[in-house]
Length: 331
Ligand SMILES: Cc1cc2nc3c(=O)[nH]c(=O)nc-3n(C[C@H](O)[C@H](O)[C@H](O)COP(=O)(O)O)c2cc1C
Image (tube, rainbow, N blue to C red):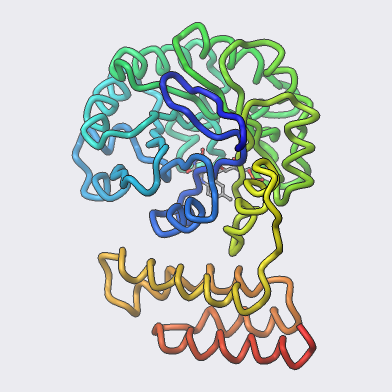
């Protein structure tokens, strides 16, 4: 069995967690990753203000099902009053953890002063955290940050210390600045620096995509938990590989048949959980289909075809054709 860590009163296996990803890691995605061994999941980010004005999308985004647990609902916002009220409402959905987004780089969020803009105002970030902690009662509050706003203002350590003092129960650190968005390499030395500076658990994030990079993150930073985002695209198996390692079980990577089977299962789940009709749900599923086919012979051509899919029957046919092509090449 893998070790466990505690975030507040919540036990989490020290394998790998799924990172929050708006527009990607929805319920279907989280369920797939959880089934394959993700230790912990986080919702897509939800606007604290939107929740207070009972935005219709809120319920869908905040709902926590048992199979996704332990799971955090992630909020973004920069006004302590709205954060406090939003946390009170979100508690009704019984999340295991409330996470606050302080890393989102997109202008739509940053221009409101939320997401990674909070890294430019440590004192406000601490007040937002305090407000959430006050409202959350026994439910732990965590924050997710970047290394800093830009190269000249690396302040993850200061942010983490302020969050700890404000009552946060853990801090997740993505080793890129806001200015880097998702380009360049994550600097994991900043995660080590945060780990050395605070007593609360530290979650290391950035560019982990397999067992090797996961071990590097644990080994070089001393972090308490590793979190994976893009490395899980079309690849819930990454969690199985890591979980198998920590529990001493044998692991064999999926062959193309298993990949296609799991892709079809994932797409059935997208359709089943969608409030839209099959054709619109398939629009959502297209990118996932392309990701499952990534890295094989003919992937580029198939990617184009994935972006035309509009029914489950079509993706089933495409999956057989794709698998046959790989078999014909001896895979
Ligand atoms: C499409 C996409 C959506 C994301 N949405 C969120 C989000 O809603 N909240 C958040 O804290 N981070 C979000 N992130 C950042 C990831 O959680 C993660 O920090 C980042 O991708 C780095 O990890 P990785 O290299 O493992 O992908 C998003 C990233 C991507 C690629």
